Length: 631
Image (cartoon, rainbow, N blue to C red; front, side):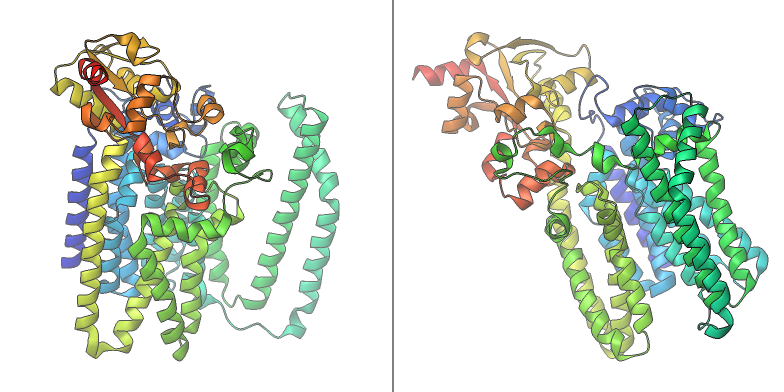
């Protein structure tokens, strides 16, 4: 209990600090150009008593796969005077992150003991990654919170008590489905929930039954599956015709064929899954209560699915079909017409990054200490685990630890930071199991093991606080910091460029704080004259804020002003600038929130310190510029 209180205190203190630090945060862009603002706008207009699918009637909305997140920010927004501000998103993300840290301790301590859970909870809460995701796009952490809540009933379930078994299985299934509908990056969590659920029910399973007594039903299942697979194209053709008529649509032959192909593939998958389930049950299930628990879990999930899809189930199902393929249609590599010019080589269709070799590079960038601990834990589990009689548990732990990453890779999700955040929890599972094994196998060395772990956690915490203060926070707060610096200097009017490079800097600040400043856009610093202040936006084309801007894709860095070019090329801008302001383009962290910039950084090594330096914004006194030029 004492350790739980410590974890709660750490979660509350860290969350509160980031909450206060992020006050005044701006959207990543203005004029309803970001998903965050679109979802908040929808959240401010929906009624929670209506069907969730009603939020999709707004043409600008981006609540698909995030229905519960939209409902969450709708509730959170009621605590604010203005419900459509970025800090509403941040607040819900931080709350979910704190709860996730506490729940992770409770769940890990149930399976692996208090000390392993305590250290892993501190690794989680002491990492800047969760806070960075919270102040960037926090719905994946909100989904994680529901996933962890779905595991809580499973650690309480009493398999000998039928009411406990059915009720808690039902609750776990419902919470798992809520987790899925809370984030577009949520598909990594339900498989983990299902695996844990099956582990809980392992007592109802046994060794394969006598094969001779099962051969006829298994053969029958196989024949039914074969007929099902053969009939799939015909069934899909009828279903497509039915959908066209029911939805009053008139699809093109190409679209019709695509739907028919996808439906036939889905039918075969469903048939295969049903056949596998039936054969597994016929061979291994020893108790009817296993079926009761599985049905209760499924009922809980289906009830939430229907809640999301009703009242227009067919239409909403097709919408989900489209958005579940986000890795294809939202692929930002498609924005680049000349691969040779940008990447130095031709990229294949639907290219999503380096693949599995990108993963360890990315983890070493964002969570190096936990990742190295994970690698060491794998060795410990394989060495110590295989010596005893816990090899089955070791294999299960290792499988769970890589399952989120495997799901992302198999489903071809975007290789961006927030999509891989679920993998962090997987790493912690293996680390907890390894610590438990070490403490069990060498109990006489427990003090030194715990002391070593304390030192590692301490180093981890110091390193993450440093990066949070020097990169994560200031880079995300660029427009807000610009506003603060201008207000401190009592500047209300300034000059700047009317360019796409300013969309996430000056224009975002003006959009978030209307009426506070007036700006005069000019084509060059020379045109602005000799008096006043000039705000220079980030000029790097390799910033995550510019990766889909066609101007930067075609033209590269901003080089349209010869005076600015001279200031940047000579480095004189450092000496004369009133302020240098970090932005997303100057960060070594946010670069991984796009698959394009992350690939260019980790895969091609195209983003150097010079590019990050160009990612800063500047506030310059025009009189100082001209004095320097005169000399």
